[in-house]
Amino acid sequence: MISPNTKGLESERRFLFYVGIKALITYGKHVLILSSGKEELSSTKRKMAFWDLPGGKIEVGEQVEDALRREVSEELGVSKNDLKIGELFDVSVSNFKVSHGQHIPLILVTYICRLNNPGRNFVLSNEHSRYEWVDCKTAARRLAVKFNKSFVRKLQRYDIKALHS
Image (cartoon, rainbow, N blue to C red; front, side, top):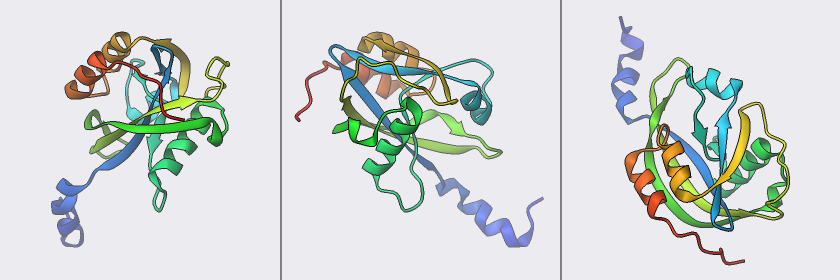
């Protein structure tokens, strides 16, 4: 039962959502994808591993590019200055809802990015267990668990071009 003090908040919940920022990191004709680790599986309440792009939620008061640099740095163990952020690739609603005891929709904002020295070995956070550089069609197929159909179709058709420096 909803108490009178929270009834108004509950009715406004239909307008609540989280914003996630993602990096579609390109290298040659490939993109970087990450497999979920124990921490990510726990926070999403998933039993099976899934593929994702580097990124995460924007914190209160944080600018979009700052959030993307922070998340990529945390997840890959690279310097924030190593990330070159290019054009906006896609904005869509995720197939996942953010759990943590709630079921709030997640908006994913994805930018095309590059890394300085992308051929290195990454030091992954506990959120991810491994990474792979794959072509766009393979990435689209693997990301289809988390990313919606419009994102997947767009990625399948995407022709990777060099970003402007």
